[in-house]
Image (cartoon, rainbow, N blue to C red):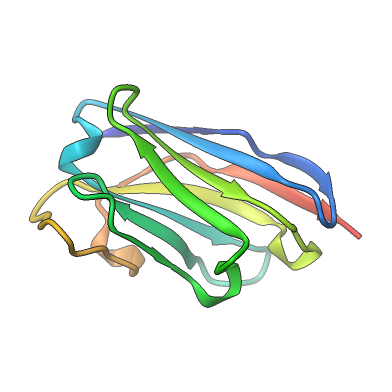
Length: 128
């Protein structure tokens, strides 16, 4: 497992942007599959985006395609989620997750059950 610490959340107006960061320790980013999930009040946790640390393959949820970009920095052991044109329905706690075992190049995981390490979450609030 790895320790994950998210940052970058906050309050933003609709149409604005935020960049979330997730710093990983205990295992290098290049060995992991990293993902972002979110959970709004009263709703289940849902997949947002994920990236393979080995070959930087990515996958996105349909509701963020064209608005968000996930990226990673191996030197800093950090994964980022750049979110643009934010909407009030994007309001949620955003969680960073890592899959550290049975990780295969080119395969990007989108289910929360595929991940074994989680951060504490960072709140994103989008006002209308």
